[in-house]
Image (cartoon, rainbow, N blue to C red; front, top):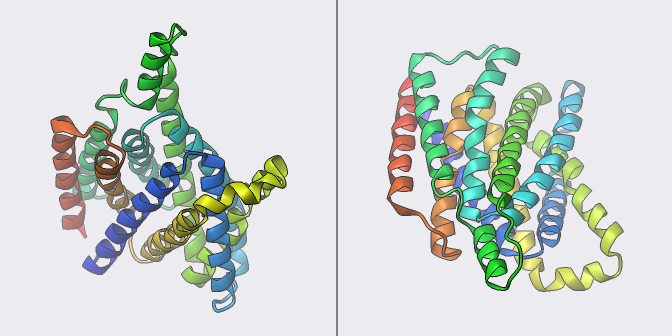
Length: 299
């Protein structure tokens, strides 16, 4: 991995955490992902007018990726509904790198060397450490405390339901990472691939929202439209950088380096959503940085 590719992936990581935070900050998650998806689709349409149509070999990957991305959006909405941003985001992102490493070895023939394998393992351990610290905390625990105080029954299993949703989100991330890594290499144009991917995946949630909210949807969208559409633009920029990087470096190190976004996500959670960070997460972040150093040494 060259320094230019590494910088691009790190910028993508920061941008990705930012758009996820924007989406989480909109209380109605269906509205949030309607705007993110719709904004991404509009960007895709604009890009498609100035970029080549992907080669025929890339279209099976595009269609499969669009389906997986919709599943990812649904799982991510569920995760954000159930738990804190600073915890759900790290768990979702931290699950992906090791799964991508296995899938890339099986389907792409990219077997990491000793440095990369050690770095990926350390980075993933650090990521999961950030995620799993305080798993019983968060908005659901606070809601349960309020419910108990008011005489209602607390939902004691909710933290683990949130964890399950976040891990499932991570598996969907690993799936579309490998699918898109193969597809963008077969496309002949990374910009064309990202344009059509945004078009195919972006309209699914808005169409569903329109079906269930109908005439009320426009009025509900108006107060949060600028934030949500900004999230959509940032999502296109972040994933476009990742797809470009996947044409120039192996999938597994890119996946692991990209997940440095969880440190940004945890910091955003602490600063803007008043969620806990604490010494255990700082130690886990140090472990992740050491792992990234080993991955870049291999490049």
